[in-house]
Image (cartoon, rainbow, N blue to C red; front, side, top):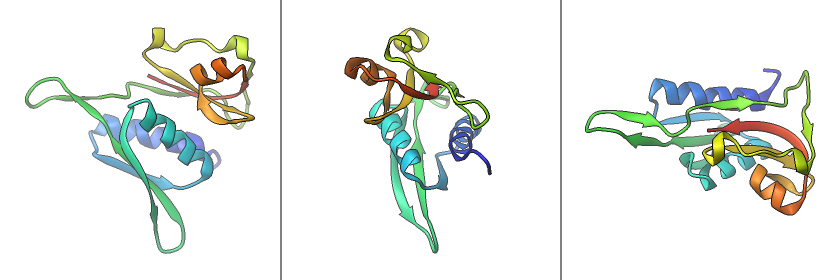
Amino acid sequence: MFDPISDMLIRIKNAQRAGKKDVIFPCSKLKLSLAKILEKENFIEMFKKEKDESWDNIRIVLKYEKVSNNKKVPVINEIKRISKLSRRIYIKKDEIKTVRSGYGISIISTSKGVMTGKDARKLGLGGEFICEVW
């Protein structure tokens, strides 16, 4: 696995499309920060750090909206990785735009930590553009 953040995002995307209740992946500080943001912005039900035999994992409980009695749709329609290992994308505070007319979020790694694009704009910070979620 070359890019653990892409792996995390793809696991979430695939689990939602398959209708899974939760998804588990290896833990890191950056992944925990991303999970906190997804929970705060109501894209997932909850997350928790779990101890395994030799390493820590993160379990994310996915969130679905009930459309009818027997049909549910995932809250996360798409997760798009922007900055990759092969090509890092950095943006200035003035370049941070809204995602899907405010229905989505951008996640940016700044000098003050990982935060949404909206928070980074308020604080006047730029940084590495990690991903967009809508």
